[in-house]
Picture 1 (cartoon, one colour):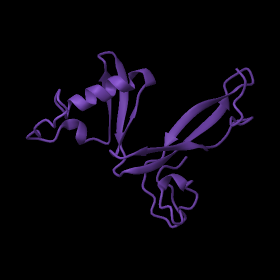
Picture 2 (cartoon, one colour; picture 1 turned 90 degrees about the horizontal axis):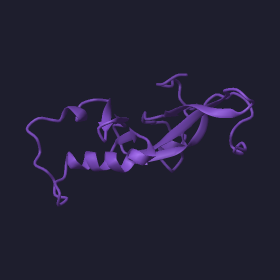
Picture 3 (cartoon, one colour; picture 1 turned 135 degrees about the vertical axis):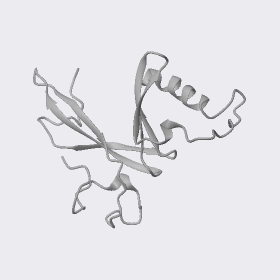
Length: 142
């Protein structure tokens, strides 16, 4: 397979890959073929067959109290859910390395979910425009 033009020629630090948005303040890492199943299972926690909201439980469900959780999808596969604490856009970064054969591969991915309060974003106010280098202290150092 030919190298994608955006794949660097040698090992890198963190490279901006793009951004992800949420208006539900939660993300899921799941295999693409399981995304619909996870969505259906997640929706069933809150909506009935007619799409109407289920009655609120007397106690907050355990999955809403944690920063992240690993859950079973479709009875056999797994996904990771994690909260962002706020709606918005979040930068996705990756690192590349040669795993053998002279081919650079994506080896690590991170999503910066901390909220930036700096003024370097200009009028956009979007978190996904921040590379993190404008901060005195990165809350998730390398």
